[in-house]
Image (cartoon, rainbow, N blue to C red; front, side, top):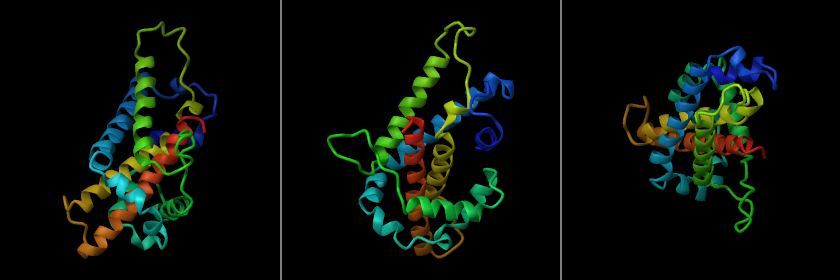
Length: 207
């Protein structure tokens, strides 16, 4: 996440990323993003949690406030390089209350679809990884640019938040508070995290 934030804030849109980072570092970045998304798919999409949150999304985020987020989220954002995680949570609340919409499903019309967002992001990143490692002449291959990473920031942050709060929701570690408050906090955090992934998926596809 720190690499992505540096790229977003400090590099030109058309700048060759290999001017700053090695190919190995960029490969690792893509690998970690895919690992996070696959974990979200396994823990949240395949278990049906994403569908339940999607079905009750408006009631979950209607009265969402910063204090609803577990302390684990504040620490996670700090670890990801956000100097003022509380401000980032306020931004996530604003974005969660104005959720992105999937626009490439003409039969269903515009709608929230977290499962679709997670899986299409995995497919897109896997395709990029295969292309990058297809054995083509590296001299002819297009150099990675900052603009090619659009959407990865929200996907990375959303995946991290979602994975941490699934752990809290499942009771895999102590959330440091009353059980009901932890369940509520984890649920709203997963909703906000999935919305980040949905937003990043749209940017990744150039919407």
